[in-house]
Length: 442
Ligand code: UGA
Image (cartoon, rainbow, N blue to C red; front, side, top):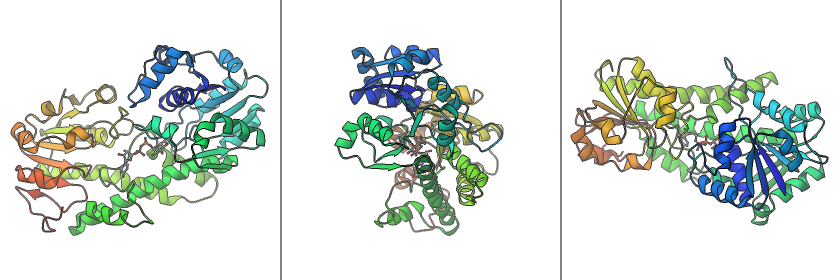
């Protein structure tokens, strides 16, 4: 089939390349000339494992191309996927739908007869209905569930597909687009517009709720000497609960979970439904950042003023260069404002971090960040940070004190190397200057 994908950011570029991989002819459309030029030359302007080879292969074969022309896209495609962003509106919690509305209007003005416009962006419930009425074209909603860092895998091997449709024809067209995935047994849920829109916001809200639930348990563990890692392990072994999204730590960030729960609570309130639950989820999440800062202060003897702090991690999660609402950078910036001398290192997100927080210090390696530090904060769980040798690291720092804000470092190894080790949701400071209150069960 001939498809277009409007919006060539993380979601759109991945969708376009993966649709080409499924055998379709695809045109990616964007108003950003720079992005279109880079992608057209086979280059991906952001970090997403596995995407660059797909883009390079399919642009070279001619199956995938990129354009800024909606006229060309309208003449080319039979199905048009809209994959533009819906950030949080300035000064409020609602989603900003400007890009979605513009994209639908732009393509609707150029489509050929029988074309189907498919929304994939995360939108407030009721949006598809409104767009269908406004543009008088056939619309479907097909939410995406891909995670940054696993975007290619999540598109080519999704847990499920959701089609929000109003006609059998729209369903048939989407079934043809995704035939290879459906043939491989991917579960499909066919529903109306509202449910399709809600599946996405509900899924992200549920994931955020799980993370905040375990982080609330971390707060209780900190107050009682419990160990949230063990608690999560035991909870996850219950077949009804499962282990995913129960990693306690500095909390969730990124361009999706925090904004999506706010936009969802806002939309629900507009509809007269109280989703105060999600306000609590948000509040617990933000408290984790405060907790890291409180720990940093405590470990530095009451104030971080003038303290050399090394922050390991800037991306909102590993395998991504995305720093939007990153807990790591939020903590780093706030410590900087409190007068700490902060040095950040991240394996791939340095450019984005520098652009977002130009006044922080940046190192070219973890080793360089650690040199002379009085406190180390581990805030993004890149695998390479797990491999840092605590003995070598102790020789680099001025004072061996670390907060593991992601709960993945081996407390015993670090304390054995002389570190004062403090984990979020752990049993308090352990090592040189403190004792575990739970007899070493960390
Ligand atoms: C999230 C969803 O997982 C995707 O299904 C969805 O498609 C996407 O948002 C979206 O709306 O586009 P993503 O933001 O890429 O994907 O990242 P996640 O893997 O969900 O992680 C989100 C945040 O939660 C990260 O900061 C991560 O460090 C944190 N997290 C995750 C935890 O703190 N604990 C956990 O157990 C899991």
